[in-house]
Amino acid sequence: MTAEHDNSDKKELSLERREELLKTLQDRFKKNMHRHEGFKWESLKDKLEVNSEKLWSLNEMETSGGEPDVVSYDEITDEYMFYDCSTESPKGRRSTCYDREALESRKKPPPKHNAIDMATEMGIELLTEEQYRELQNLGQFDLKTSSWVQTPSNIRELGGALFCDYRYDHVFVYHNGASSYYAARGFRGSLKV
Image 1 (cartoon, rainbow, N blue to C red):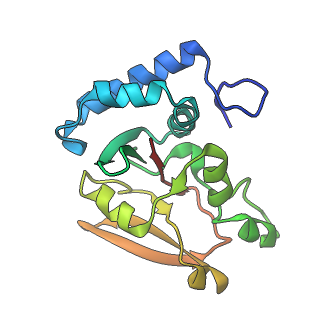
Image 2: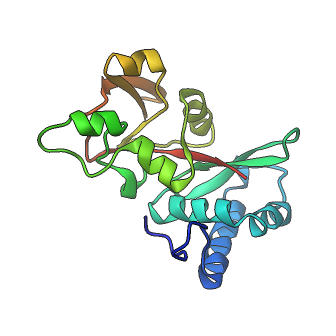
């Protein structure tokens, strides 16, 4: 991954990168208030500043082109939810097949990575189909690209995987072989903070 962190297992950003990322997140938060009406940046910032691993994951989302932003808040768990809000599927996560099994089954030419392992390494989860639909209520995303979404195990066991895009003013859910990969297909993630 591309984040700056020490060589130990602890995922932590340098002080300079933390400040830079917080500024980027704050600017995006203020520019897109329609995604989180009534939320206060100061409350979110306080949570981020005490949670270095989540901040590290947000940095991974940011550096791979995801443009993460807050989309909801759960009062019961006191957690904010971030989604990748880049207009198109994040550039740094495209040309990936669905998971490791699909990657290992691909003979020629194999992709460099798979969406599930990449998300795990970043500390995030792929959006579900429901979350993808929620995202589309906040704007129009994936007008030219598509994004893998979490796939039910019965579909995956048969070799398939699901992806979504937005065309003709509608969210479409499709299937493909899990080992397929395309330059215009990546994945979007979510992160609870």
